[in-house]
Amino acid sequence: MAPSKKRLVELRIPSVFGYEKVAMATVTAVAARLGIHGERANDLRTAVAEACINAIEYGNRSAADIPVIVTLSADDRRLLVDVCDRALGATRPHMGAMVDIQHPPIGPHANMGLFLIHNLVDEVAIVCRANGTHVQMAMRFPS
Image 1 (cartoon, rainbow, N blue to C red):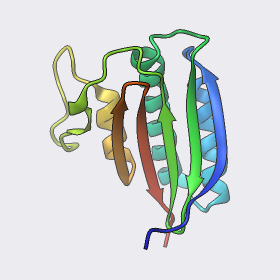
Image 2 (image 1 turned 90 degrees about the horizontal axis):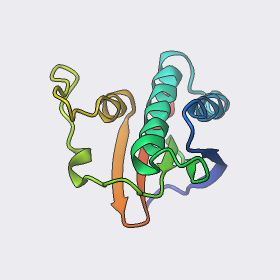
Image 3 (image 1 turned 45 degrees about the horizontal axis):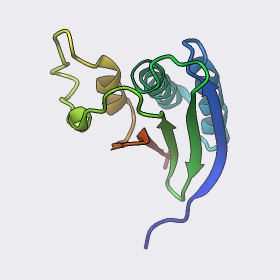
């Protein structure tokens, strides 16, 4: 049986660089309330910032009037963060295939942001749809 999930916060930020800091502050506050602190909280903040930056730049093409939607929810075991754009840019189904930290991506089309996300949080799923791309991240609660 799947754990029950409850929505905690939904945040809409404009697709303008700098507003990812609002998402970072929000996820830090929610994580702290749920017992995620220190390096784990910093990793989550960085992953959320990278997901928001990608959503602003690639997903929404920096169109300020199109929001990036960040949803924070929780189940019995983890904090779940979903960063969603409107997919105005090209979606790439291969975005979920990441290498490990010992073999970072290189080259002009390497996406360091996705590489970091995959290496900073416990679980990642990237769902590309015609109406938006969702970067779904999870950070397990401390035991």
